[in-house]
Image (tube, rainbow, N blue to C red; front, side):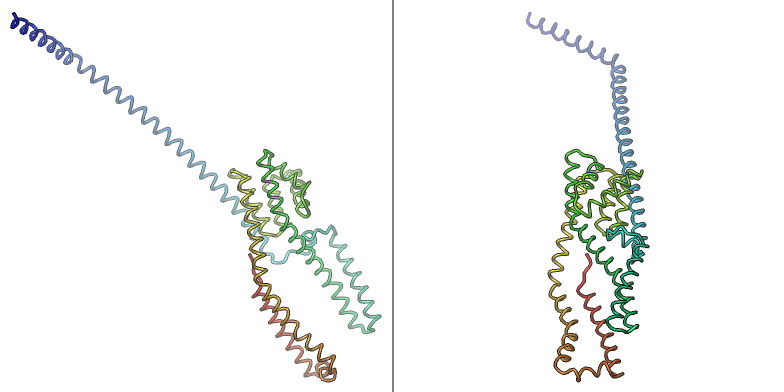
Length: 336
């Protein structure tokens, strides 16, 4: 009985196995076809995804190339303008007057110079009675002194701008971080800044009101303030307008760079102060000795002024002293 049950079970198992093998053989082609179809669908989807990613990467690369080319073109334009400005080692007198902060015309300047020359020449003629001396004084005070005053006022104004400019940039950084646009930050400096930064930023605002965009208006700052720091500011604004980016961070970095340059200049001035003092002493020593000799024994030194050979000696001494002063000046002056 037990043997019969075992045979029945074996027959049933073999029948089930045969039925399964028969079903698999019949359905194998269908199952294999569905599996291949699923693989093809999966590969198509993967290819579409890769194509989309490649297209997105290509678009990002093209956009980055466009932005890079735009920045390069902007920098090239600014560089050409700066080279054109740098070719003129000495700007015209009209620009110097504007850079000095004076609101006078060329006609007024020439009239004031002529008036100063005539007055000083008249006083010299009354005091000395020599027309030659009076003419020399007239030329010096009519042509030389007014230009020197313009140069002095210009240098002082540029120095004041350089000292206040980093503070103005810090105010702009805080304004932009608080949510104000760049126009309002510039307008804030033009209304609340210190001179001469306030006047120059007011001119930027006026240029915008006349229809110029911000990069062009900021680029004109370098023509009125011929400093590399003003040029840096114009370049930062131009790059931000062309390529975008974090403007507050860029202006903050510029402010930090300007302060570091200022510290470096102060350090160099402190280190070269001893050499400058030595140069001043060496340059003034001949005049001091000549004055002391004239006070103690005037007949001994007056031969230099009365004899022709003395005139030649004085002329040669003046030439050699001028050469020495220029050499020392170039040795102790450093550009940063």
